[in-house]
Length: 160
Picture 1: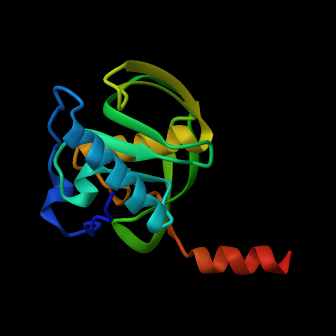
Picture 2: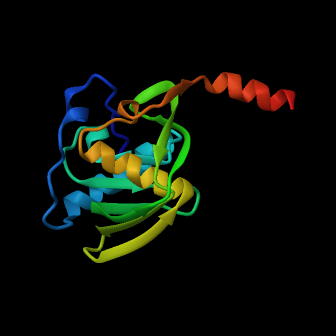
C-alpha cells in the first residue's frame, strides 16, 4: 500500500466524470487499498478515485463502522432530507451545510467482484452521496447552502 496525493479544488480531474470499472482486478484492489491508507492518513471518512488522480468509479468510506470499498456505486433509492455540515479532503479548511438524503440504498461491486446492496442512513448515507458526487465531477461546494467556520462552532461548544 502507498499514500497517494490528494488532488485539490481547482485540479481539472475533479470536474470530470469517472469511467465504469469492468472488473475488479489486482490493480483496482491496489488502488482501493491505497485510497483507504490515504483517507486514514488524511483523517477523512471518505475518498473517491478522482481525488487521487484516477478517473475510475471507485470510492472508500469509513464513518467508524469499518471500511467499505465500493466499485461502480449506484444509488437505487433515497429518502428524506437532512441539512448538515460537510467538508472535503480536496477542499481543505472549508466547511458548509449541504442538503442530502437521510437514507440511501446503494448497489455496488465489492473488492471480491461481488454485487452488494447496502441500506445506509445518517452519516454513512451522506458520505456515500458525497463520494458518488465526486465520481460525477461534482464537489460539495457546488451544493453548499451556507459556509461554516468550524472554529466558531468548536468555541460555542466549549462555552456550553
